[in-house]
Figure 1 (cartoon, rainbow, N blue to C red):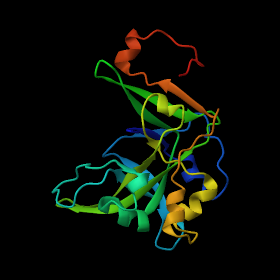
Figure 2: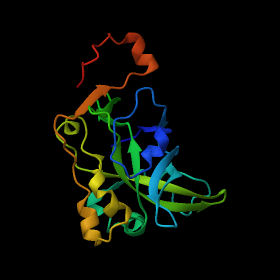
Figure 3: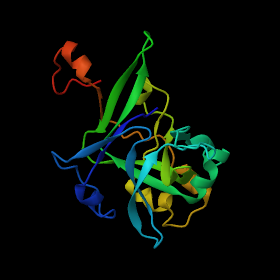
Length: 221
């Protein structure tokens, strides 16, 4: 499952939310989000308009005195029936716009190889999330979990789940701007398979970079 993503830090706050998405400018500053870290989530504000709200990645159980990410993902198949997620799915849905996301491949030696996935057209990826307000001894804060679905053929080579990716025409229904029964909202959570528009490359860490052989720029999975 996805355990990391990179998110545009500015990009005119994601081009005011409503215009057609364009390619991410070269050199745009990004932030790396992992569980427990903060990311910006697009949601509907109290005035009914779209806003970007900082949220921590992970759902923590109400009884935890301090924040602990007990859940990072919600399976689309059970998101409307599992008590942990059903209320948030019905009432608090959002979108995380990312540049890339990571998937881990379990290797025979017990280690995990991280792969970085991105679209070739360089347009941002809209990942479906649900959010909640966690309250603990240290106060309250907004938190989110990522919705996952069955993988497309490319990602299925390395793992059995991928993020639920939304097409821009469906944002209004997912966010709740457009009235729709929950069964139609759930129907948006399906495998995204835009064949030919995906790149996948090994994530290179500082440690692995010392021993790795140089790869051509186009040498992708």
